[in-house]
Amino acid sequence: MEQKITGGCLCGAVRYEIDEAAKTSWLCHCRDCQKAHGSAYFPAMMFLRPAFHPQGSTTGFTVTAESGAQITREFCPTCGSTLFLGTGLYPDIVIVAAGSLDDPSIYKPKAHAWAGTEWNWAHVDDGLERFPGQVTKRK
Image (cartoon, rainbow, N blue to C red; front, side, top):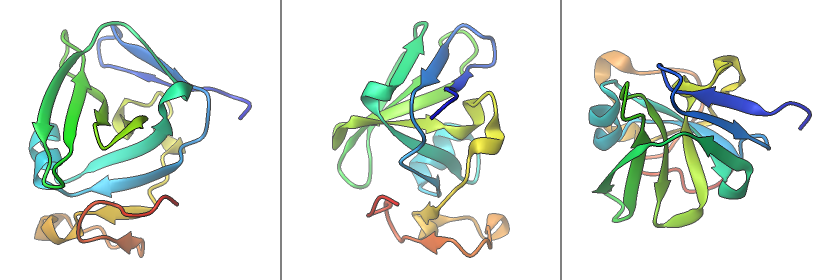
């Protein structure tokens, strides 16, 4: 990858750089993501943790997901922007909130996770593969 992926929070207190292209990306429709992000779905991108370089302090909030995995969402303690999350199930990866990217046009979703819980008025009919739970394969 020639250019680093960059992003950060709304107030600029937290920034990050990523040294690789996303391993996969999806729209998550699980109820936890809906509540955590105040939205019908969460646009997510997965990277290997060694390629992810955050700068600034974040605050984490941990929940047990429906899958049984511990999920810790990291956000800016000043402005509250959700930036990334990690899971105990896959400690070698980081999931980045696509809305925090400096250039959101690089986000290209490949699937829908927890498609059975999407809101009927927010159905995204894009022809992408739909998983009834978490995305079970890496694209």
